[in-house]
Image 1 (tube, rainbow, N blue to C red):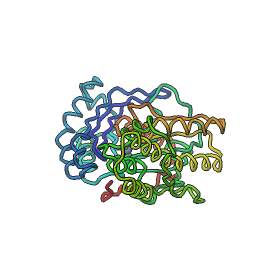
Image 2: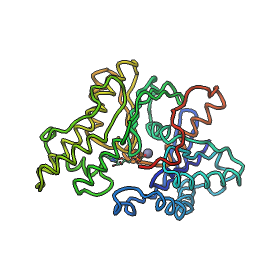
Image 3: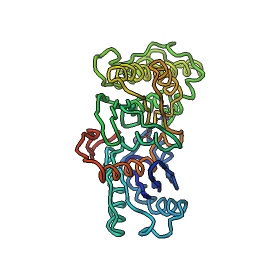
Length: 343
Ligand code: KG4
Ligand code: ZN
């Protein structure tokens, strides 16, 4: 089957066509129009501006995705439409949902609602070969989420831990802003951190010793704010040391909790995803954890780490297949679309 994916949950307008046949997954097109430049001057995503940009761009992005996938007859060549229904920014989500629903109505195609996190998790299958090593511990880390999810099968999820306040990517973005590094902050901090000494500045890893799998990142951001206030003027090397110390403090908690969860739930693999999965240090450290536990470690290709519609189309394809063959009564990721959620 060929599935058209639509993703507009935050500041990326994305449409993709993915082919899904038994044992074969092919990305026929994956078009992403990023609004990063627009939001950079505000230091974060402004929901009503994002929504307006989605409305302006989605038509062109859709046309380009069809052209690149050689789709000339939508009714004949596309079998289903998958769309992110949440979580995300309400004004942004609504544009993609309305667009996808209109297409489904016009062409009488099934419309598959996809949870954004289900999409990120499936970015791991957008590659040639990946064994289903279940149960898998999914570490979903992005600008809006920090979740540990136990995946027993496609569509069969249990949320075992989540952030109680800021998401890890959000913490990177806020820290970058404090350091005058611009938006988005994750790539800027990790680049600078390569030249710094981690632990040079003691920053807290909140909840690292808590006996649960939840996270909290607002305290780390505040600690950084006070540190910068106490030091005063900083030179380039100090800035790099602070970036490295921040990155380590933020990642330590994820690595420590992932390791504990992987052991407790006896998982067969660890699977990283979400925008922060582009972070090389996090990749390397989770790879080491997997090696210690003698289980495989998976992470998406770099081009599928941040928001895209190929991951949404693929998650939709799996849902569609499973709904035909299995009873979908199992527990899906317990994240309902929260139309007022913003980050
Ligand atoms: O998945 P994504 O595109 O959007 C959400 O669903 O939130 O993730 C974007 C987030 C941003 O917060 C960005 O700063 C972070 O991913 N990010 C990184 C890196 N690259 C992107 N964080 C840390 N290190 C990176 N290399
Ligand atoms: Zn995302």
